[in-house]
Image (cartoon, rainbow, N blue to C red; front, top):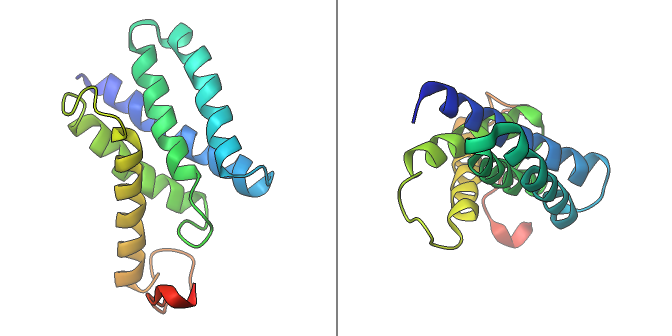
Length: 143
């Protein structure tokens, strides 16, 4: 995979995540609708825009949209979407030829990316991100 293709994947994942997050939280349309609309339009438009790599770009955008489905408890702003998208893009590129035809690959990678971001935020005490500098309570009974 060449550098241009990798760059395009990173951009598509970020755009998918940010646009889904915006539709989900700012327009208050809900996570499923937001991901569905982004995935639907990327599946129609991107194969025509990118020709040979169009299906890969649509898959990358769909994967990014799964990150945008996250609740405000896990991802609070666009910067966090971008960080999680970088994790996801890296996994996407690395695993491009792995588990071909196995269902759930994109969603699993998105979940791993969001969990990694949440873990980093918790361990760092939210210093890098908007927060009060204190680690979040990990007791799920209080959530």
